[in-house]
Image (cartoon, rainbow, N blue to C red; front, side, top):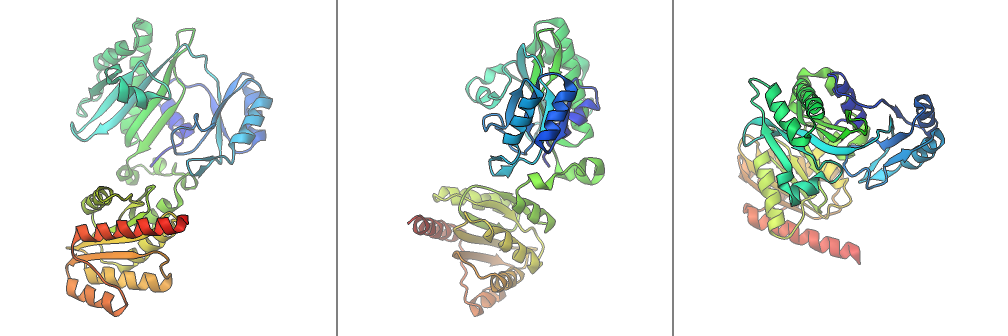
Length: 384
């Protein structure tokens, strides 16, 4: 679960991280009022769950309250990577002497939270990682003991030669780690961590991603979810107990099991196609899951072919077949469908499909190749 910047900042403020004041506005008038209350230049920042807000024009410096109103008017309603901006954060602008990056992720290789810190912070930290990786210091934290003060100081001195600044950064990193653990994060970052001309170290931006598996034990964090800022299809899938992630391709995939789903997407790429989604219906044999899966996938206008890849173990393939039949009767397909079924009750499933005008394959490679071929043809015809 992604948090908005203003939500992440509130969680960091709660553990003592120094952050310039800021409030959320949903209208240009509210933005002007907040800026007038602060009596200082402010930043007006789009609140959407995507990166690249600044490059998209969603972050603006405003020297006056009138400018804050004008910029908020331009940003509210803006489309940034497919998401509409419905609220902005109006925060006091910080004087920036230098920028650094501090982040924590869960590293599956070490099975530990890992700090990433760099004195080359700012919006292009991804480019720094790709072109000058030596500028990023990685430090795994033993979860049994947490981040120790000496470890934080080592990272502080990696960022700053000034002792006072290194100590301030070390304290912030300990606070960041505290918030990371307390809120069930899979990622928490401050970018940029700023040193002002007066030598103060403050967090100007913040990002947090919460592990969905933590939400049951953290109801207050779960309540921060903003479905209006999420992909509509992903919200529908979650409410239907489906694991779904929307992608940018044109081959819609319906698969049972995360491993098979990943292998399916890899094969789609291998044969020259692009998957439109990750969708795992899980091990359940409930035909209603198949109905919901097809409804969500067919709502995506980019999908030019649908691929079912089902390996029946716990999942009964005849239930999947019944789900396909029910779904297509309720909403006739406008794009071709390729079905690969094998496993539990396979013969019964093939019979059900045949009676209703469908054919099915048993070879995974052949099915993926066929789906990619049909998607390519459909895309070409649509482009004419």
